[in-house]
Image 1: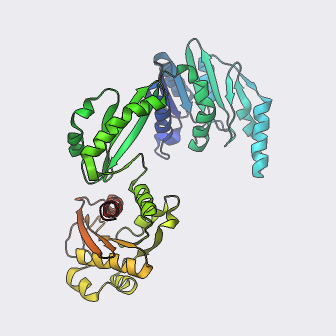
Image 2: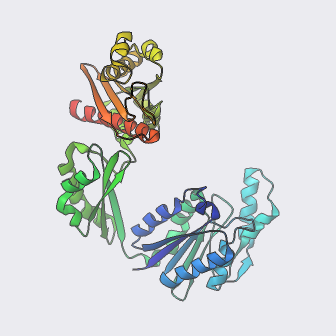
Image 3: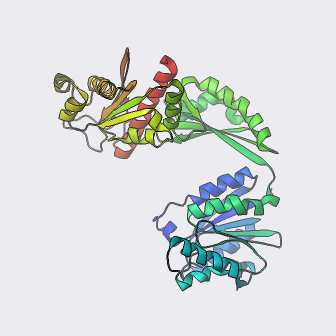
Length: 413
């Protein structure tokens, strides 16, 4: 099995100015090809340090993939250093130059002459044309070793990998690895792992637990000669885990609970409206992030002030006076108001203390109430995160409310 090292080049990554998502993407794609990634290394735009990192990578890996540092400015040194150390001379390529000129012409910009620096490519190497930028990717093979260099921007790198680099690496493919994620909410990682039990010891397929913000997941991965066989191996394990975890499972291979909720609302031909206080529209945003949400989402109310809760949602003044804005009673009336004012089939609500400070009454941040109203059904649930992290509390509150909606539809409709 071929082993690979991913070399990320850019001082801006080391400074924390940008998040390096390329490693995650490439590691996943390479694993699917049966190519093991053993090292991730990040190095700044420095000739000596880059040369050292490259030579170390080549000494311990069959394949080195470098991203970043292919721009037209003097600090973009990845191509020059890696080709020099790998023993490949550079020459000007007129086809690449025309591609760069065409890119600028299409955009309606004048091309700076220094962009033609990107048209120098290794003699005897392979050029991967860039459909989304100016810097081409490069591939070289020598003495049983392989070097791939790609642009750093993910919107340039990812399409280039799928179109050109994956076929270039095909000879290293040993198998296909297929992974599926079982997403859960309402059960912690350790409890989820306990329910999975002996299935965690399976070698092929493998089952691995992960903790995410406000939820947990199990990743089932199977290795086989092709995707069809791998899926065939994985499905019995997935079905057994779903049976064991029951209502905790909100979806398989979905990006988030909102995706499952929108699918359920469409399936049942239902509509929803939201009433939000502490989350300030985050629930509505997450629903409408899902393509096609307009078929099921009526509207969202963001009601921070008590008088707006009364005016827009019809929350009783007496309720707010007696129980406060952060209460089960207020959450129920907010949900009811959202449903009745909008005409949606279901109204959902969230009110609470996001933090980081306690409220005037000394109630701790992370105290949240969720409400749901439907015809002949009205409920509220209490959520305590135990955290004084404002962003965490808002995100987890939104997730919990969406999950409350999912559970209601699955059980009651």
